Image 1 (cartoon, rainbow, N blue to C red):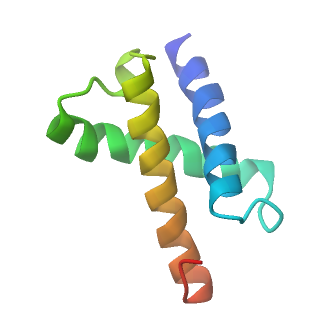
Image 2 (image 1 turned 30 degrees about the vertical axis):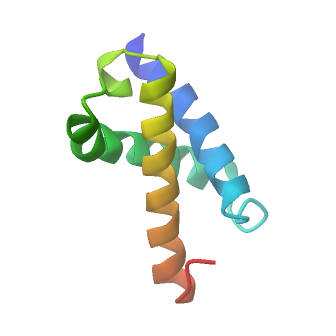
Length: 89
């Protein structure tokens, strides 16, 4: 059940990150979900220990875990944009 919740929350965070980065029209819902989930995983492994926040993958759905996962999705989306277009935007 935790995996399903992480997929849903990751998809929402990926969609919000694509709106912030203004790439929502260029990519579909599948890429939004992938960016959100992978961004949440990367943030959980790299950013969460630095800030002392429980990662979203451990089942912690508080505001700090959501913000760290959102930050991870933004960073991943910026990297994807840099590779695809040559600019972060």
